[in-house]
Image (cartoon, rainbow, N blue to C red; front, side):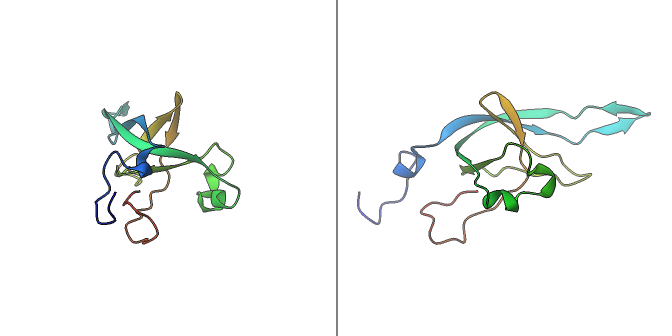
Length: 117
C-alpha cells in the first residue's frame, strides 16, 4: 500500500477490533417522590479491548482500581458521567457490563496512525 493511501476500515490497525454492544442511559428523575428510570439506547461499536498493567491502573479513578479494568481503542466517542447531567455509557465485554470512566481523545498524538479514543 502506498504511503499516501489513507487508512481504511480494512486496515491492519483494525485487525484486533471486535464488535461490542453498548448502552447509553438517559438521566433519570424523581417524579412525585418515585424514581423514573431513564430511557436507554443500544448501539454497537468496534473496538480493540486491551488489559491494563499495574502502571496504567494508576490513571483510573481511585474507586475503580480494585475492579476489572479494560482499555478500549475505538473510533466511537463514548461518554463518561457528568453528575446530574448524564450517565456513563456501559460497554458489554464477554457478557459483563462495564462503565466508561475515562475517555481520552488521541488526535493530538502523532505516534498514532489513526485517530481514536
